[in-house]
Length: 387
Image (cartoon, rainbow, N blue to C red; front, side, top):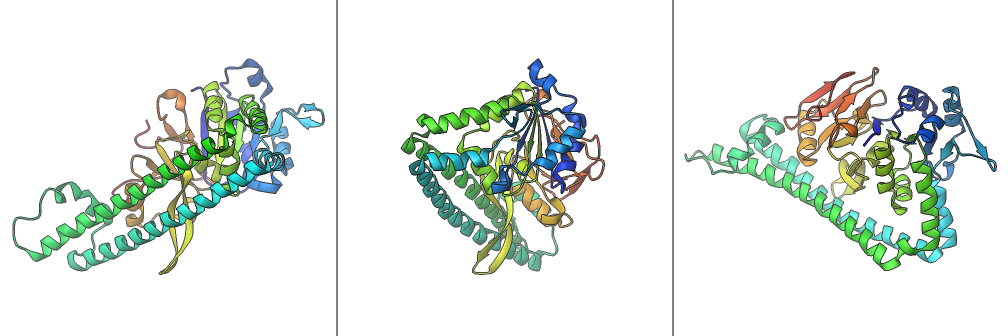
């Protein structure tokens, strides 16, 4: 992998974000000399839906950086839009039966997701009640400390007959079981999504559909001929659907291998993780709650990190219990929070996983560990475990 990925949490100005990335675009490591010299930029704005092509302000910002336009048949092919959302619309018009099958697939995903969320709501409510009960009996223990006791708690109950210690032992084990159930629910949802995709492909023969192949080839060519790729936010579902429908995950991996720099913000940052984790309202019998949930499978360009954009807006970063919960729930990945001034550079060229370094001067990168500690990584500092 020669390319690099730069993540941002939620930079509010699309054009200013592009200008901020100028120094990284100048340091292109693309293997293709022509691509490197052209400094071609690809904009991925499918999350803007019908406004996908309202990117003039971004192109003007790139022009101020000295990146040239190149017009062919009235279209700019050097400051180019992927146009994935419009490609989906075009395919729907050309192949209405295939589009109808895709909509049916999405409706089924919504049904499965509802069941998934109901299970989550039950287990999260049980987690809160169990933790409250334990604190009534054992005092104000932190969740991270309690979960750290699990290896010992699982061995055997206390040898004495102290009711207080026995109850504490059993409740700590219950906490571990509940977290494990939440993790299993996430894993099962991932498997269901994978199975649905495989079923859709087999049932429709989409990979052999001429219109789909034509449009996918067009999109793939735009990705692979770019030196810099900007993946903006907006509507997460529209962004994910537009890119995953045309199976562009492997194309982005190849672009990264060739040396393209990928700049992702907000929903774009979520998309590049192995799993897309969002913070949404979910109504239950207890009323609406705001909970973390698995939205879908991501592109997995970064597998060792779980990115949380809009960090201070959506995560109670001063709540140690909340941070410990996140770190245990989304295990096997380092949980990283990013704000609008947070920038995280991942360099896959330096080994599997790749080091992750904070490169923002306006705000830090926030790392949450299993003890519930919030570690601030300042400019030039690596995220723990990625050095």
